[in-house]
Length: 446
Image (cartoon, rainbow, N blue to C red; front, side, top):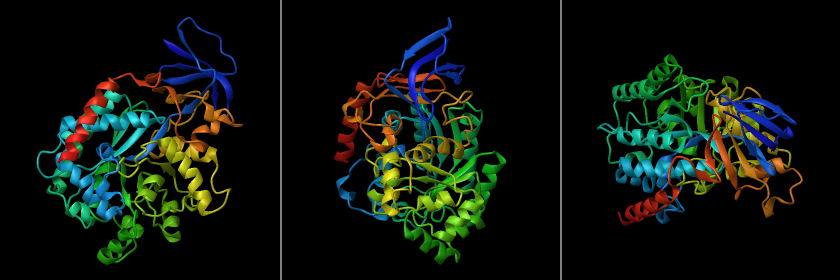
């Protein structure tokens, strides 16, 4: 069966009909004739938006919003008080619900692809949480890139040093990654599950020789590389002190620059670093809410764009980005850099491109992120008949210039409905609601 969407408003196309067949947009025109096998969706009054691509997240934090002990903490103290303190309390069942909630929050803000930087690995048998994440993604129906984090030494961040768990050996990291890739990685265009290799923090959690080995291992298997870098000035201090060079030069020295690499944050990349990143084609997952929430600073994204860096947007974990909304990240990205520079620093169309096509390309999905014939049918239908949107002269800018709340009527991935009438297709949201509330009470009680 094909799907015929009637009279949807689409950015840059106006009000059009769209047909979906075999996971892709097969026809787009002002008026399409109905075929016998078409299922009709009336999208009159709806904005059809490309599926958003969240290129940096931490689903393990979905039950740790607004922890009072760390509400005013910087990154170093926050790591110890929130994510690393929560880790020992997680089991597979709890983490499955935690991840499912996080996925649902993302789906409700138009995300069809999520790159989750999952780093809860240690020396002992620790793969139950990883498999719970995989299962939660299947239940939610979302497209997932599992960024396989972890550390091969304890590192220099307070959070890592506070951990009760021993880091993996390099051999464990590689053998377990190989197993993950063999069982789950799918490099096909329509894939809903891929793997990237992502040591947790480039200058803190793995020695130089380990990083080189991991980069070689990933490229031999055509996997992408991801990590945190220059989120705070401490990263640069450690690179200079321990390696005698700037952090970006250190990344180059361990083979961690290139078009198959993207870093989260890069808040403290100076002009020289930005040029090096741009020349090498290394990308960024820009996480504006988290950077402000933790007092980390403001990245010079317009300069990165001018330098030719691939730009994408990430929500980051809910413990430092409590709204967990990609729509809010788009709006903040649009506003933040205008405040830094001037009113021409960002444009709604450009921000949408970073949050959709830009993120898809950075993750290696060349047939995602745009509403065009032949592209994979990842999209949301957003109800424009809401009072706060009635006054918009350009409704296609609603998610960027208005942010939340927005009502997603339905959301599709590979041409299949994942949300309908704002409700998930794959699980009972009310049952999850009850279970999560009990989980949070138990976590608070210690």
